[in-house]
Amino acid sequence: MSFAATILTLYPEMFPGPLGVSLAGRALAEGRWSCEPIQIRDFATDRHRSVDDTPAGGGAGMVMRADVLGRAVDHAIAKQPEAPLLAMTPRGAPLTQARVRALAAGPGVTILCGRFEGMDERLFEARPIEPVSIGDYVLSGGEMGALTLLDACIRLLPGVMGAASSGDDESFETGLLEYPHYTRPVEWEGRTIPEVLRSGDHAAIEAWRKARAETDTRLRRPDLWERHEGARVQSPSGARQKKER
Image 1 (cartoon, one colour):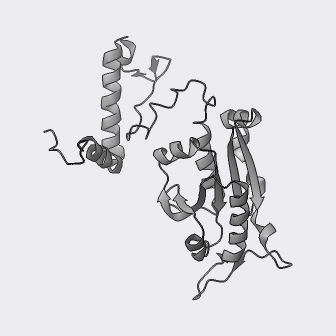
Image 2 (cartoon, rainbow, N blue to C red; image 1 turned 135 degrees about the vertical axis):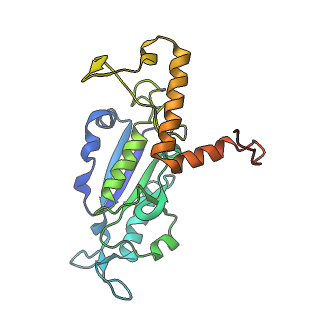
Image 3 (tube, one colour; image 1 turned 90 degrees about the vertical axis):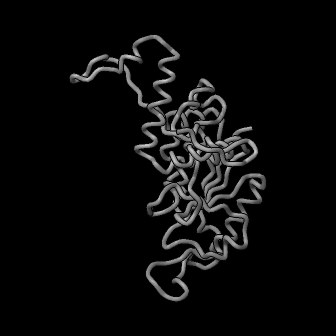
């Protein structure tokens, strides 16, 4: 059974977009996943196909209406009742590699793409929607976030990357940034590939890569390093252990 992606959007022409080329595009052509964008405006009831209105309490911009979105969401749930329903919004929980792996292991996903100032909050109270964010910044709409989420999932589907272990050492898979990479030529603009990587000593190479991953994570992403260290010193019983000096 292929991974089925349903996207609720005001711009269905954006899909599959970049996911129609490279690994994701080949996987789409091979039927490993499917892409069905659905136009939210199709669920509006007025002759103008209105999907938004002015914010309650005043303020700039427009807000997507709960009644229109509710009908769109209900339609998507009926099509894919087993698929998780996500909404791309900066108010959502940060997307993690662990969540991506869980989604990729399932039957697919339905993604709601917001626009304007956002979506009427009553929608999240009335429907089983998981708000998700891809970062602490604001985009013009949820479509780019949906493409990002889908790309992260599709590359993990069986057969998409080729070797099953291709993604095992990548950033965030172990809670750390990935170690740096090098390839030929050995020397470039006076800079050489680290000697250990040319030594053929696989144990030494593995130790170097682990040390660099830890060092780079500590320096570049102290937030990740803090979480990694916290998990590392957690005992199986859940009790905190004293960190090694």
